[in-house]
Image (tube, rainbow, N blue to C red):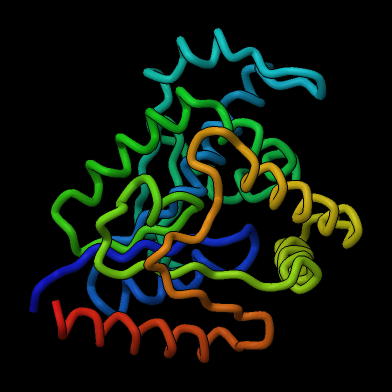
Length: 230
């Protein structure tokens, strides 16, 4: 069966990664969480003191990009890939609020996007890949055979994120999470490089009132239909 490239874009906390992971597993494709890559760079910059409330030390970050190595490895317990930063598993740490509050700022930096987009394109050059993020169907793989744009209301996305944090034993405030979701929506859609937008040939999915099995079934059916005609 011919393999294709599947690009899944959309707003933060709308379930893109959950959908993409399930689809990649069902198809036997490679899954790449591009959001985790930007989160890993953000974590690196936070650890090195490059980020303050007022500014980002972009000069130091730019010279450090060659020292930032991001990889993924399957977690046998969860059955899902974990994110590694320079050989260290940082899957839990990159999902915290400190990273969430700064990742859109890091993602807007042109040299960061250029470096990570190049990595992402190399990862998917042989097709058979499911990749999710903000600009996969518009910048990374504009020729992807299947493009999906996922969204949901800000309130529902914030509730999902809030519940996820609590399930991990982390302290969380719903209003803070909601404010973060809305701020990220604005920053992601207004940045100069690779802004969040739906590709002209993408299929939109509002999963505000869908269960995870329902959205996974919808996406798998769509993918199989596309694979059959390619």
